[in-house]
Image 1 (cartoon, rainbow, N blue to C red):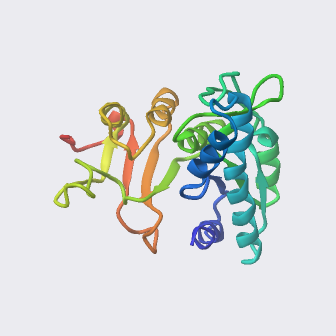
Image 2 (image 1 turned 60 degrees about the vertical axis):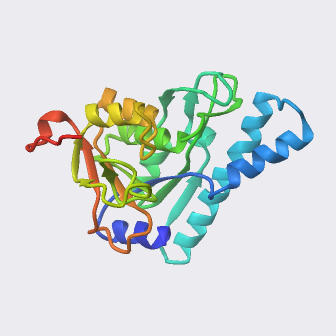
Image 3 (image 1 turned 30 degrees about the vertical axis):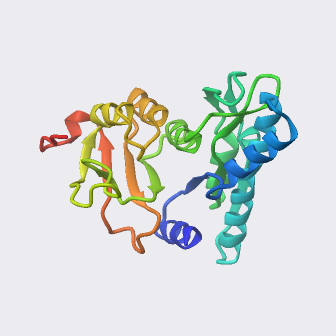
Length: 235
């Protein structure tokens, strides 16, 4: 389903960079393996272990794209050179080298990047902590000067409260980055707070869509600058 959507976006003439996270439950499975082997797993080795979850998805998505005659190439965080500090399991992004990605885009390829991971100055694999793929996506969008960063999740946008808990929650079509930051800090799980902070700092619009909607014309929420919103949204 993801490959179909990516191929469709590319057929419309867009340059596409996709950031993927691990498959559902995979990170927990790997953490469970680590705890079976060592009571308090070594953080550096945990990062080496956890980074494999995203690498599986990048390779599989590229294979799915190739089977649709869509040229694609996968990279892990170190290959794209997502440079982070050395705080294992909670690293922060310092810099992204977009040279390889730009070269591949110029050749008409879809670039699939493993989210949630990077490397430090010493070449050690690091991970960004829970929800780190959102942060990777926003950071790459900023580095590549993208028009917007689209985050596909299990809900079709941002609601006034969790629609899985309160069925009559209202969908919000447009939201200011400041308001999203406030909601994320209050526990809204739609977007990871670090990703929203990154978007706010660099003024990168985020669009939240559902992975399960068939078309791309369904509901979504655009999280953007305050001045780009005409109507007042009261959350």
